[in-house]
Image (cartoon, one colour):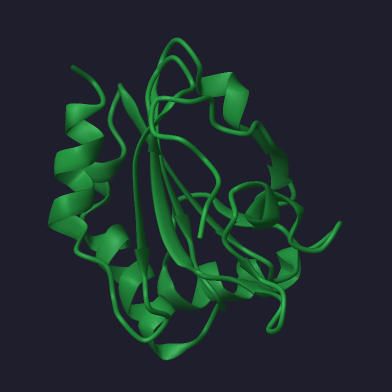
Length: 155
């Protein structure tokens, strides 16, 4: 599914979060490991459950050494409504325009639906891909596994 190589460089990007602020992956290089959650749609059943799970464990996902970014192709204003409705207080990034450019760079854009597949990446402090997992869209992610891989990227 993805042409990215474990140990290879993660494609850099700058996307707007739900507040209209630019977030750039390279800005974490040298200071934080990053877990990236690509998810198909704001307000959909599995995605809502996953984002709530991250929210409920945010103190584990976001530390002095780690950052959590969630990316969909929804417009920024939809992401703001999603965040407000569900109390999601971590960056929800809009890959809306150019549509799916970041998801495509990571090899996870479903061109037919125009949405990212349910995929995750852990990027180490040096900006290298340390781990990736791709779930079926109807299948929720194992957040414990994500936390283990994020922690491993720090060592």
